[in-house]
Length: 278
Image (tube, rainbow, N blue to C red; front, side, top):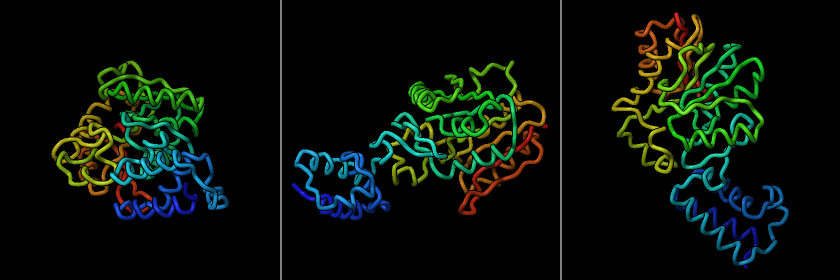
């Protein structure tokens, strides 16, 4: 048996030695997950002894995390835009950077049909639906049936009405439906990018991450085909890498979009580019 304080100390040391930047936070999150104690309760009960079975489970999770396995996959959820979303290895883990895409979409102040492409866990469309409610009819697509299943579960648990479609980009989207806005956080990492071996990325679905030699193959497809599905004057918004702003703007302009602009994230880096169907 071991006290909570000693267990946390050992876990933090293990994670720090493995170069896990969020070692202290992750150690607390994983022990909270097993004990059902809040972070504050872990502090106020720090002299409480953990039985050997629970301690063994905790050390196993710490070992898994030390190898880079994402905390979100261990816990089975991730917070995004104030929503608790189920995630697993079928879905990309929502990042804070993507909240820039959500805020930019809200700033467009649209009503009507809204489509989220490559929805994954449903993070973007569920955030928009939670804010805009009946002002929009929400649609989302993904080519992964596993991701669609997770997104549907999240919509049901949050009691948000979204129509999910299994589709490889626009392949199964009804052309008779015209959208007031299309949004997407598509794959945008270069195929051989060294970052694919870092952090949690080796454990996340590769198809949700990479997109050709320059990372822009899927963005080119979306920008080209979205014009057939957007209402006149409706915006298309895409998240991308912080070094891709100029390239993405050129793709939009070459396809004839109006008022093309790039929005920076909270760290002042290019993150979202939008353009309006001419």
